[in-house]
Amino acid sequence: MDRMRRVLFSRFLWILAGLIILSIVANRWVEAEGGPREVLARWGVWAPLAAFFIQTITSMTPIGAVFISVVNGMLFELWVAIVVNLCSGVAGGTAMYLMWRRGDHEFDIQTRMDVLPHWLRRHAGDNLWFLVALRQLPWAGGRFADLIAGAHHIPLRTQILSLLLGYLPGSVIYALVGAGLLRL
Image (cartoon, rainbow, N blue to C red; front, side):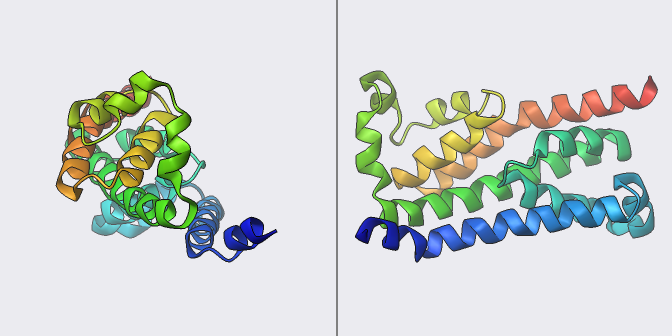
């Protein structure tokens, strides 16, 4: 009972719930405005900033930042889409890292990670290349890397470097896919 109460009144849980609700609201707003192309056309020069904000919020939730990364490739010039995708990935990954640092304090994630296989625990600490490689796994790899980095309290500079190196290939690929879809 005490454990359930600790979870329900945890600041971490409420921040995560707030981010999910905010991303759902942002997604509904974009749909109500006529879709991403219509919203970005109205925003003009501020469109990349709006795309960055929406993508960063949704990247921290299960809504689908990959879809938005591809749409950015369709809506913007290639270099703008790559920069927006990369900056959004770094901002979202940094926020999740900070949340998992807090979550480790509240939920003792580090002790729960001790049940992971030895080969994974051996590399999961302050290991830049492990975090970069983990980010290459589709969908959950980046979020799992953020959890490991936050729970292990690695230095923020290592986390940011792993985000830059880990998300650069995906930022380019998704923007290229979006630009290619536009030509079809």
